[in-house]
Amino acid sequence: MTQPGVKAKGVVISPLHEASKTLDAVWLSDELANQNVGLYVVFAKTLGLTPKVGDIATFEGAVREFYCLTQLEATSMNVTGTGALPSPGFASLSDIVGFGSESWEGRYVSLSGLDVVTLSGLDVVTNDKYAQYGEIEVGSGLLIDGSDFDVPLPFVPGDSLSVQDVVTYAFSAWRVVPLSASDVVLE
Image (cartoon, rainbow, N blue to C red; front, side, top):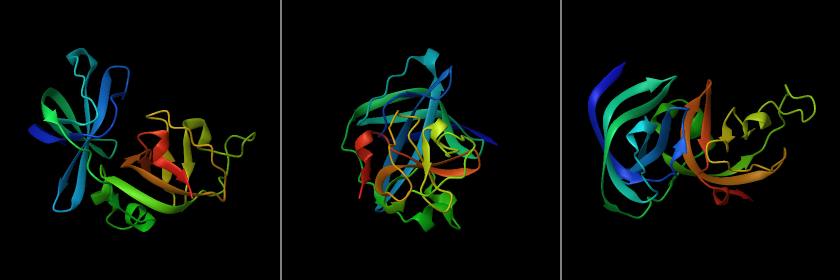
């Protein structure tokens, strides 16, 4: 279902990145009532939009679900200034993968005590079914996905991690997407 004519205003918290061959994207965040809310914003490369981290921007377009991920397909953007990045909200593993996890989609969060688990493999060399996609599993099916922003994830089963990232859903799994290498820390 698509809802046209939607305006979303917030702080751009991610670098501009390629969502597909024809689309670029950013994560937009806003703090409301001590709760961080966010939205994935995609737009045609032909529009020439160049939002930067820290821009306070209003995007206009249509909201729709794209393979279970809520996103705004923007047709315009207006930058009105720059601002501080919001503080990530604290979340637990059970918040993200448990009942009601949909309410966490798009939020900028901080998680700690995430233990990298042993993965049953499709890749017989590494015994890791996610590594080929730049992902690791940290328990209860939650994935850390470093592929969008080329964040290396050189961790092994048994490592415990703290992360700051955006919560998303793709390919039938909840994921957290770190925006830079410094957002994933070995505890």
